[in-house]
Image 1 (tube, helix red, strand yellow):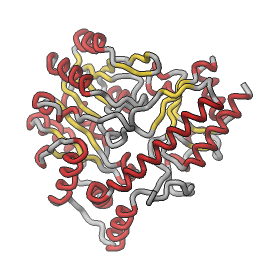
Image 2 (image 1 turned 45 degrees about the vertical axis):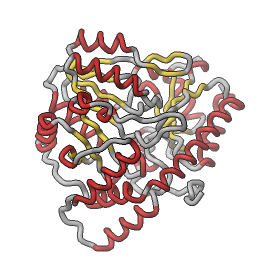
Image 3 (image 1 turned 30 degrees about the vertical axis):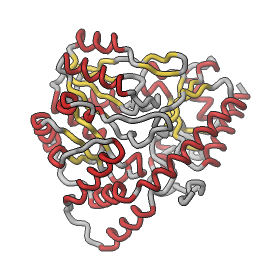
Length: 391
């Protein structure tokens, strides 16, 4: 491989949420973190080089993207997803969660129902509740180690709760599903039937494993395009979360104007200069780095699978189709949610994401970030194995 993903880099004392805030979050300071979804790898060298040039200039005034920024996005989505975006669709925000919250305010009123598919990325529920809307759940079904959509319940929940907005997580975090085209079509058609606007969080779209294809919902047909807000970002793909940049595509002019109004009401305007620069160069030059990263992540996934089979048969891997987050089933241990958390934190010395935060359906599960050097991953699994043996 041309890029180094094996070197362990010390992230302590870098203002890292993942590494520097254990004590503030009630964890032991020497805990090994595999929780929040950022990677322990430096971003692509081309991005670092361009940022160095930007920083060395020394003037960091108000900045805005030129046409070259959009061209980089256009080529990326055209080549990788066969989706031809238009520059008028683009609205930039500092993050996808920011965009999701703006959508809730733009397209619903207080007390309106917004639907999610739990267990799901926990900010979905938080932003619905903090905006004084009603959370409606279409729980995913775990069947033979694979999550499926309950389409009958999906339609029933919309009808009974008069759902106005649906937050789609695609690929799904934390269960790792990459939705098949026919699944997306079924969801999209039900939403059209009941006039439910779809906000599609596609931040993990660049991470799919062999045999699985990510379909941009808005690219499937014209009706879906006019009914969907597509939220994207280079932050997961190129490890740029701290630079605060996301790109949201809204083809429907009426929905776009409402979204822009909701963003404007926050007082937000331009992206940061480093965010603009990093995003553009990532999409212009980052493909080779990403391909090697995905190869390395597949190796990490293969390592986890083999380790669990040999050393920890009590813990089941929900086979991921995408993302660098894996969903582990600990229910065979027979521990309560509290005891499971204590075992992982105190005995194993690991900081993972407890499944309960993703919804009641996640109890007994843990989300693990495998975007780290393999030695780090191996160390974590050994710690986990030894702690479970003491039960």
